[in-house]
Each structure stands twice: as C-alpha cells, then as structure tokens.
Image (cartoon, rainbow, N blue to C red; front, side, top):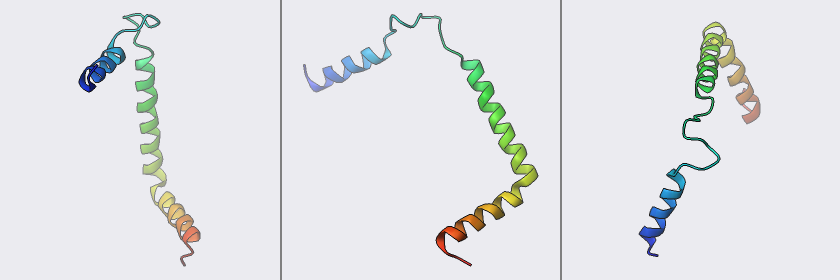
Length: 69
C-alpha cells in the first residue's frame, strides 16, 4: 500500500459507522449543549457581579507569585 492509500484507509476506518453505535444514536448532545450554555451563563453572571474583585484577587496572586510589590 502506498502512503496515500494507507491514509485513505485510516480515514475510512475512522469515519465508517461502528457496530457498537447504532446509526440513530447521537449521544446526549442536547444535555451537553445545555451544560455548556449554563456554565457560560454562570461565568458571565459572576463576572458581572464580581469582576473587579476577581481581577484584584488574580493580580494580587500573580504579584505574590512573581515577587512583585
């Protein structure tokens, strides 16, 4: 097999449907999307409420680590 044929075979193996996963089984995609959106919302809400304090805490921690003032 040539290099190209080997790579094409590898791609076919990766992209072909496997026997242990039925064609209609997509997993829990809506659940993961919901978790991701909720996490982003929580981060945005925390940043809006305590953004200044979080920046101060971070800068203080970095200054202590690096040995700044």
